[in-house]
Length: 365
Image 1 (cartoon, rainbow, N blue to C red):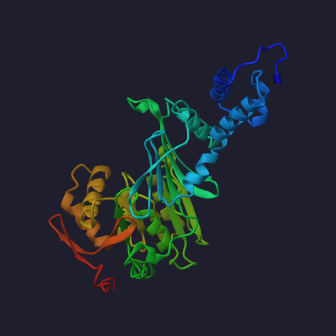
Image 2: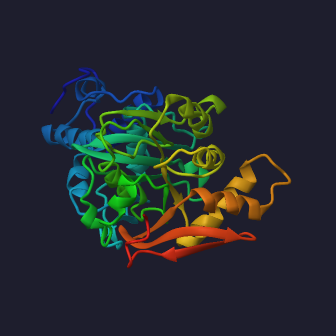
Image 3: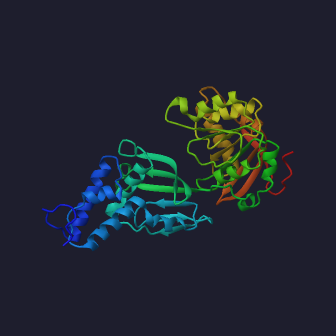
C-alpha cells in the first residue's frame, strides 16, 4: 500500500483517486492559479499503488504542460481549430481542413482551456467570453483566439490558433507576386484584401521587408500579428478604451512624421483617418481588409467610411471618389496566393474604374 500523504486516511482505488485529483486541480483553477507538480503532489490523497501515482502525474502534466500539443503543432498547418475532442481540425498550406484528434477526455476539455487562459494571464470567463492574444508554444508563435462555452447552446469552449511566422515568407511563396515589390519601393498606397486565413497578413509582413531601412514605420494592430524586423518602427496595439483604439492611434501617429503607416486590419472607425492620411499626401500606406474580391474591397471601404465618418449627409459617390483618388492598388488573396491585383483609375457617380494588372505588371509607374 502506498500511503504517501495522510497516514490516517484510507487509500483510494485508481478511479476514486483520479476523481479526487481532478477536484483538487479544479479547486486550484478556481483560485486563478495553475499549481506546479510539487504543489499538486502535496494535496493528493493516499493511494493504493505506485502506478496510480504515475497515472495521476501523467494526467496532470498532460493538462498543464500540454505535451500532446507538441506533436499536433508539428504538423503542416497555418491554423488549428480546437472545436472539441473529436471535432478539431487543422488548415494546411493548400487551404484544406484535415481532422485533428485531440488526446483528451471530453470532461477535461474545459479544464485544459481554463489552464491556457490562466497561464497566459487572460481574463476569460462568463463575463469576458472572448479573448485574443499572442503567445508561444514549443518555440512557435501563434495568435490565440478563445471563445467561452457560455456563448454556445452546447456549452463547449473553443480555441483557435493561427500560426505566425517568425520570419517573413519568401515573396515567391505567394505565387505570381514578385512585381508587388515595385509597389512597395515606389510607395504606392496598397490595400490587401481576402477572406479570413487567406494570407493577407503574411503577405503584408513579407512586403515590409522591402521598405527602405531608413524609413519610419508606424504599425497599428488589433492583435500582434505583423512580425517585422524593420529597424525604425513605432508600434501600437489597440485596447478597450476610446483612447487606445486604432482610430485614436492613427490620429496620433500622424504627429510622428511617419514615412509609412501600416494598418493591420480595417474594420470600423479607423478607416476614416487612414483614408484621410492618404488624402493629405501620405504615401506608401498599406492595410488589410476582409472582402470577397478586389472590387468588393473598394465597396467595403466606402461602406465603412460612410458608416463611421460621422457625416450623415455624406454621399456615397463622394466617398468612392475620395477612395479612388487616394488608394492606388488592391491585392486580393486566396489560399495564401495572390489571385488578383487591380490598379484604381478613378470613379464616376460612385462606380469605381480599375484595370487588372496581375498579368501586365507594368501599370504602377
